[in-house]
Amino acid sequence: GQGITMVDVEVGDLDAAAAHWLTLCAVDALLVHRRWYPATADAYDPAFRALLEHGTRLGAEDYARAQCARQAVATRLDRVLDEVDAIL
Image 1 (cartoon, rainbow, N blue to C red):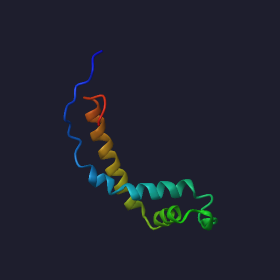
Image 2: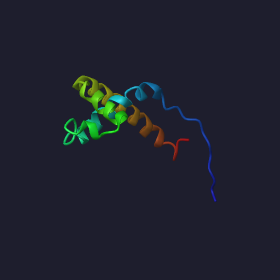
Image 3: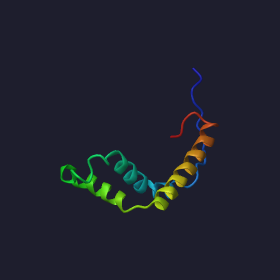
Image 4: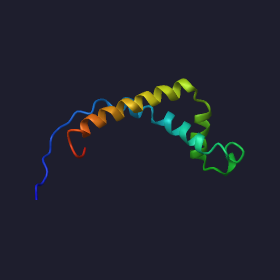
């Protein structure tokens, strides 16, 4: 077989994008659960209900900023994956 060759790659600062994860997760979850939440809020696990409640406090600008950060990371990772088969 051919085996593998390990090389170092630079993907940039992922911490900045990770900071936006909560915003994206909260708003996306809220959109999926809008048929049931808040009408059945008491039926949700407290941690997930807190996530949904957080989503209700976020605005369009927060979500747009988080989406831009997500897209920037996706673009960087796409460029890296054009050169390598996997990132470990």
